[in-house]
Length: 385
Figure 1 (cartoon, helix red, strand yellow):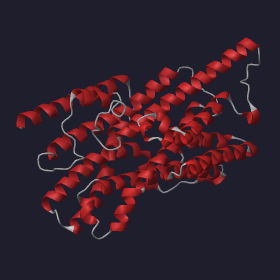
Figure 2: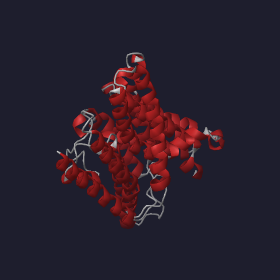
Figure 3: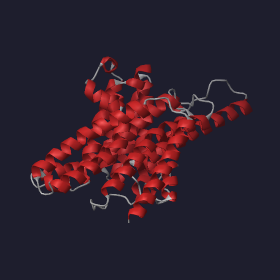
Figure 4: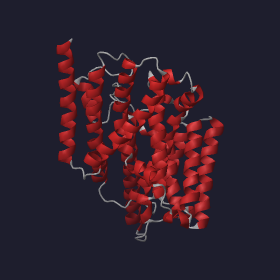
């Protein structure tokens, strides 16, 4: 289905999830939310506790779109996994590095008069290099911006899936060559390929073991359950009716088993999202649905909004709390203004950075700019002290 790569339904879903994440961080990072909570405690508490689970929607959609690109029929359709992984890295890090430069500058500017634990100290070289390589979580370095852990996990998941598909393709090719079998890839029961079987096994391992241990939450295996469910959803959408039912029942069985073993609302949401994708994306009307333009647009630029909004939230919190620290009206207005400015900052980042075709030269320049801006900020702050 060629229309899925730019589906209005998926764009609108991403838009809703993006808005939920921004509002979660506005509720999570005070002091505006602390003041606003005096009049809307239920809303702030809900955003604080539950809006963050929209990440599961992004994980499922990420797997769904990865399957559509890497293995639309259940087997790898690329010849060079290293090239695909490198392209993904470049696509992620160019807007990521630009957003981190903004986050570093904003936090350095407000730190002298805005004392909050989530405002990072000027970064050191190791911390900057870890972020440039998307290794900050693995190396235990403090994040320079909210949500950058997700970028690292997204890259890990894509790289892991690319390697799994490539290994499965190589293994089946070797078996065919040794056995003198047909050129067409052999399929197991219900037409499942070796690559698809590996994905199902990975989903089971993640849901039943890795995702139950928070010590794994800096690694892709912790999140592979939701990502893999998204991949299974794609294959279910592409399959004939009978096979689609088989995929859906398998997905439901994996999720229900995981929830019986250890109830996790995030897994319940991931399972519901993946099954809803199967049901809705198989409807002919879905391909014709145009969605709501503003929400669809937000979905298209959701990655840039996700990257840029933390710096905006920090700046608005700092200004509002400095001039109107006890004003409920100012706090409520500040949260709304911060949301609107986050969308605008994401729009600027999307139009001027993300949507342009990235290259290794561009990625290296932005990475160098990230390290340079971080070190310059650290030097200036030390001189001012």
